[in-house]
Length: 219
Image (cartoon, rainbow, N blue to C red):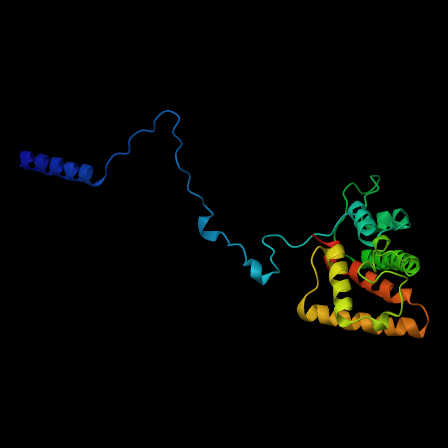
């Protein structure tokens, strides 16, 4: 009886060995794979087509130094009053605040609108007197000679100007229905500017709108 029991145990052990093959010891320098504990909870990245071509993070606001440089490049002149409000715009003072704030807020929007008016009005007023398009920025695409009645521009000329300016300010041209809306906005601004005999304000209005748009402030 005892002998039969021993044979049964040996048979069970042999069967277990056949079903569970032994894992060979790792060789020198061989790394063992590590199972990712979060594999089942990883959220896939969103479709870029659903968020204007972006993947991952949301847009971030530019810093004060980046804003100063962007205005000078886009408009053609610096914002002279920027340094006076730099702390309010988010620049650290390194006394109480050591890290720059790039969060959009109402204070930033208010000061930026004031700066846009200052810079755009000055640039537009200077440009209407210039006859060489190469010396102009806001009216670069308009014909040679002093800037005349902007109400007489053709639809193609208006769209070309807006396409150039939006690319200069945002890095991408206005297109489709949005371009049509901006063309309508410029036409209204040009009509009002001629009514009050301040032609430069039509160019300034477009400049202010482009500079205060989120596409100028984020990346």
